Amino acid sequence: MGANKKQTSPRVATIASNTLRSPGSSAEKKAIAGSALRQARTPAQTGAKVEGTASRALDNPRASRVTQTLAGSVVAQSNRKR
Figure 1 (cartoon, rainbow, N blue to C red):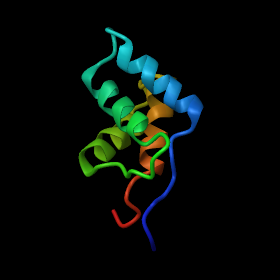
Figure 2 (spheres, rainbow, N blue to C red; figure 1 turned 60 degrees about the horizontal axis):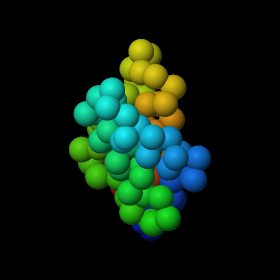
Figure 3 (cartoon, helix red, strand yellow; figure 1 turned 180 degrees about the vertical axis):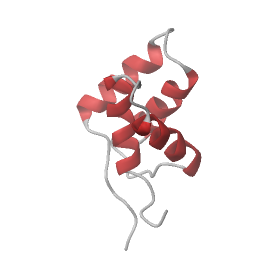
Figure 4 (cartoon, rainbow, N blue to C red; figure 1 turned 45 degrees about the horizontal axis):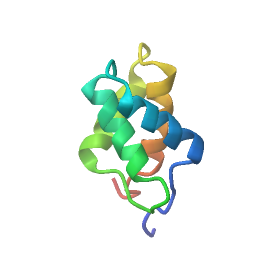
């Protein structure tokens, strides 16, 4: 298997940008948003630390729809070997 070449969609990149600008967003949510935004227009892969954070957000039934959207995008772009 080669490297994961998926990229963040423009819609998710906009959500990530808005999340980073929001003063009410948690540090965890901003970390996930930052990773998603970094992967817009580039084939960058998610780091292990943010992948774990995003995975926990997806498992959390209380996580907001925005958080889950960002986390799903970030996990989809993670290293395939992990």
